[in-house]
Amino acid sequence: MHDLISSVQRNCDISDARHAGDSAMCIYLMRMREHYKWINDTPLGKPFDHKSLGGWIETREAYLESLESCHYSPLRLGGDEYDPFDQVGINRRIGDDNMAYCAGYGARGKPVFCLAERIGRESTDDYETYILGREYAREMSAPVAMSQRKTIVVRRDALLRMVWEMFEEWSWRKPRNSFYKAIAHFGYPDDTSRAARALAENELDNLVLHEIGEILAGDMLGDRWNEMLLALLGTPLEFLTRSVRDNLADSLTVLPTLMFERNAPSIHFYFAGSHPVRDQLFPMLKQAYRSWDDTQTIEPLKVAVRRGRSHWLETAQELMTSFDEYGDDCMPHIQSVIDRCAL
Image (cartoon, rainbow, N blue to C red; front, side, top):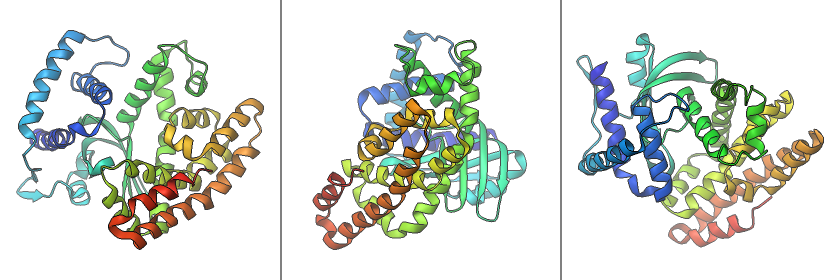
């Protein structure tokens, strides 16, 4: 397994090297810091030597620069060789070792690889879900969940680190906002680390729900959506169109479930982690959340989600129509749809 871990990590590093310029400098440095903490297995909340971090970043950047022109390596298991994107084949081979591997593409077409301890696996007629624990190989930026066809991967360690990053950012000023209301349900401020872990554990099922929503949205939109997204990679419209689909996916699964279960900490956490672009596209939902927070009346949220389900499907279809009609000249027309799609 040592050779497998090294091979996967090298592919992770190549992906980081090729896409180092995709993020703003502040985001890049924040991800470098978190990757340093992961590599050194720094416990949550433990201070670290910032001087050592600076030296590590300098060395790390030189290493990544040396990898920019390298190709992703196949993974060798026994006498067999696997394409690094063959998630199904690799998992079939390593499944008896309580390990799981994931590979796919994230924002801007960035390849994503991960090798981790498998702490849970659930198979149904529709989906196969892997819950990953300790991660042995990963990139600077670790998506907390991914789906490929009907296979869903949820990364508990990456989720916990994301929650802790949110906590550290919140703790600078400690506003009584959505994040505070979410973490307060789990024992903050008496035991900060325990509260963060409990909050992360509470969100695992919601990550699965989001990925199911993504799969359902994909079934509704078809392959044409992916062709359009591929044409928009690296442009400002890529994130906007992804946000439309995210709103559709969550209107199909996550939000109806949270409302049905009256899961208050998860409702607060959902809005604490919502990206400003998604809020800008769906102000009705944010306003309904504020109304629920003030009055505990769930009906405005139900109305917003019900309207969102049809609205975001129609918007996504309109985006694809613009792509089909205008081809290489589609971008201003797609932008026009985005400009008037807010709900």
